Amino acid sequence: MRLGGYVIHGNNRDTLGACLEGLLAVCDEVVALDSMSTDGSVELARSMGARSVSRPWQGYGAARAAAMEALGPCDYVFYLDSDERLEPEALKTIKSWRESDPKEPVYLLPRRDWAELDGHRFRYRTEWRARLVRRDVAVWRPEMIVHEALPRMRAIRVHAPIEHRFATSLAGRAEKEERYALLWAVRAYAEGKRLKPAALQRPAHLVRDCILHGALWRGGLDALRLAWAVANYHAAKYRHLRALRQGRFPELLQAFDERRYGELFALVRDGQLPSGSQSGRK
Image (cartoon, rainbow, N blue to C red; front, side, top):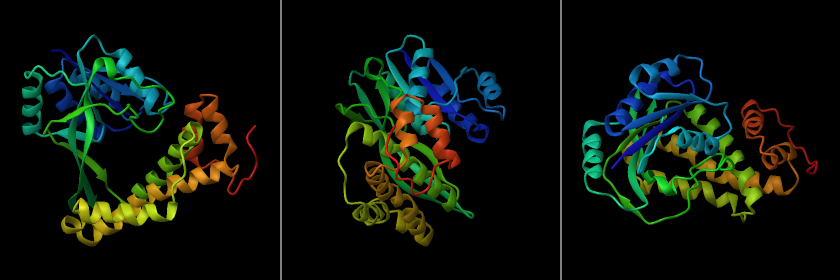
């Protein structure tokens, strides 16, 4: 069985090396999809033995599709984010999985989100993610701008934890959650997703992460503050979706419709949006 691997990165030299070490240890070939980094990440990837491919940033769907195109023939694909890594036991488990003659379309791995806030490091939560995917179903499209968005398929769990550097500051995490909530809403608007009560989302997800996932017991008040920032994503998604339905941010909708995904990300990232705009779509 041949296993291909990839990682999408920008200026991530500080974490990319550890990520690539894990991929290179278990994969027959690794592609490092570079979104025009300037910090030496490309040179690092090449020096470690990965194939570096550079593309202007057009969102996660386009980047994943480009990484798949760059990979040679393989039976399964394994992918990590650039701030994720594998410990030796996880590598051992994945190697055993390879030898087990896998057949299922998708295998889920536990991703352990770690917070590092003012010298306080704790495991925030663990979530299961599709990361080992059979090549014939590992299909991403450019309009999948912010998440994996693979269709739901039968999936089996593989106990090979992915260690994820999830948060290093509350402000940085909160800003990222708000930005990606708006991007999610743009795609959701295009797909005609229904609204949910925004006011209920934040407390529900706060309880989920703090109590059900146990973040509060491991991180105390720092975990509570982080969970409040993270939970805002789920409320903001539907606030933004409602605003889009009311005619706000036509520039974003037009950019998405015209498949100008790089410009869409730039508008959201740089804050080049008219606050309170009520103009209609062009």
